[in-house]
Length: 166
Length: 430
Ligand SMILES: Cc1cc2nc3c(=O)[nH]c(=O)nc-3n(C[C@H](O)[C@H](O)[C@H](O)COP(=O)(O)O)c2cc1C
Ligand code: SF4
Ligand code: FES
Image 1 (cartoon, chains in turn yellow, green):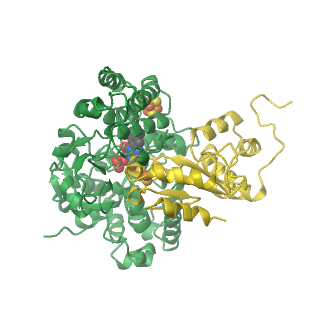
Image 2 (spheres, helix red, strand yellow):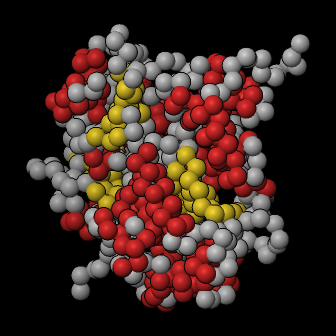
Image 3 (cartoon, chains in turn blue, cyan):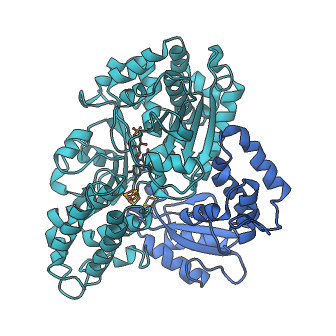
């Protein structure tokens, strides 16, 4: 029987994820410091979220107790434990964007996509959430689609951007 | 004479994204000069300049470098590119437009303190800036600026980007170290200070992106030159102001430190048409809100403290006469509630309570006792927690209750918010 607290998954990390982690090893004096980069890499591989098998595989790879890895995953806003859309939209709703109409942008997305925040559209295409300041307040109101920033938005331009996602 | 931008002089010139282009614009001359100096002399020059940290706290940079002990232990520089203070976007502009200026500043700092490794901790949302920086770092390795033999000096410097994963508290320096080491970003007890026990248990300097971008200019043109810029001997050098909110042209504007709100409004095209200034936040979400009457006060460290606010990250959020301050502070209260790391009771509970009381006020369910309640809560949260986040959360709350009591009063009628801009805010923020 496995020791309590040790990973019991049979899933290993896919070879390319493991190779990418290995490439980072010389950059850090401890293995533990690879945890955030490793989770980013794993999440990319698992379609934008971290199912239990991904978390356990990362724990095993870095020889960390799974509880430690879960603790980190739940602490940070960019790691997800539920499926997300193929395109992930983050609408800034902090003060500078709110002053310029962030609320309307969120309402537009809700109407356009027909789902609530954190839900995935039935075709798997999109999910959206409101987010804290994204560091682009000169573009307010703005949102982030996958890695890209868009702003200043109007309800119309936000609708167009979402429509054009494949 | 018109002010010549220093930090943003290369903004909008894509040729400086390569080492060759940056060199053609005069770049890496300061690093070449620095490696010809004794490390201690470099630190002295930065001390002379009077440069104070641009990340929020305003701690003198040269003094901080001087705390690094001369031991054989490895030493680190961690560049703080977490930039998550609401209203702040200057570091992004610096990294996207002039990545080599930052690399050069980091390299000079590393040489001065004897750090052979530099991590740039960049917030995870900054995907494009990280890509630009990554390419610039690769180019710098190929050009011999970074690597085993920095500019032929024999000094070894490794530089890497470390991506955050979405947590404001990782901008706090010890939260950042925890995060870099692969843990939850929960701030550490100080002392020991990072200069003695920092990253991986070793002496570590932590400086903000803008702070480090000043360094090449100080080395090239001298600490005395730098010191002559700004309000006075304690507030020196150029400063980037991030202007957002109800202005015609939001953006980053560079001034000698100590620009007034009217100065930056002048650059930003003034208020949106037909609107009047009501209030402004001079230094990001953590800074107490100032009324319009303070528009002529220099926005530097000491002058802002003098009127009960702070320069912070110089994120200037401008609010016009249609703005509901209860709603604005309520939004900021939700931010702090979300971002408290939860270690300390006064912060964890206080930010929760504050968000609840503000939401109640916003919905027209407040009572005449709420103003007192807010003030009492802020007293319980001040100076009682481990890191400055709790004090930061207090800033906007206390200024609402003490400087804008009429705003609270106006919400007690039962109908809730009397302002017309409800739809601008997300109903679910938080
Ligand atoms: C809650 C909190 C968040 C912070 N966020 C940032 C940040 O995003 N960027 C930054 O440079 N400093 C931030 N700081 C300040 C850092 O703790 C630290 O003082 C700074 O990085 C030191 O660099 P400097 O002296 O060059 O300003 C934050 C502090 C606190 C308490
Ligand atoms: S003050 Fe708040 S954010 Fe800072 S350590 Fe305590 S609980 Fe965490
Ligand atoms: S408040 Fe929206 S990007 Fe800063």
